[in-house]
Image 1 (cartoon, rainbow, N blue to C red):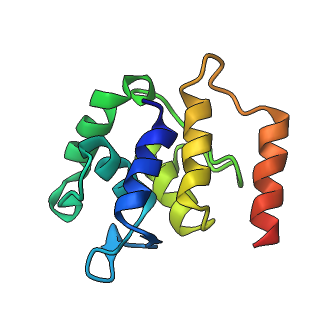
Image 2: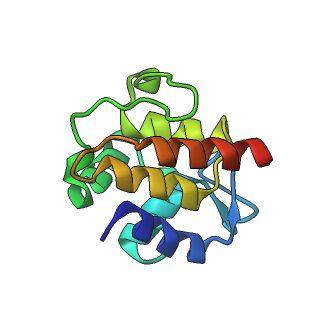
Image 3: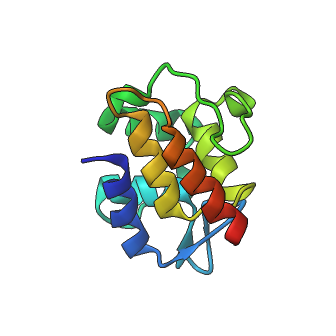
Length: 133
């Protein structure tokens, strides 16, 4: 499965998006990382008990193309946020730029594609989407 498919699966399990927290509203809301992990497991996970190391091992187990890579924020170009690799960028896009979880999934798909680079069209699409909010 592609990252966006895992995230879409997780979004169905937690309808609302949370910010600055894995989950909120008694588990009804979840951030993009929660959606990704829920999608991988296929059910609501106990993400709050995961360590960053455990999160990375679960994500890289399903999406090994993301391991040992540096990532740059597609919105503001911050590079490898907090030295956390992909988790740092996921948190950053979710919490700081307030991208919808599905948008982050689309961006993540591009990172595991053959080129792993954002096309100019996609960058413009994301910038326009974010400016309209």
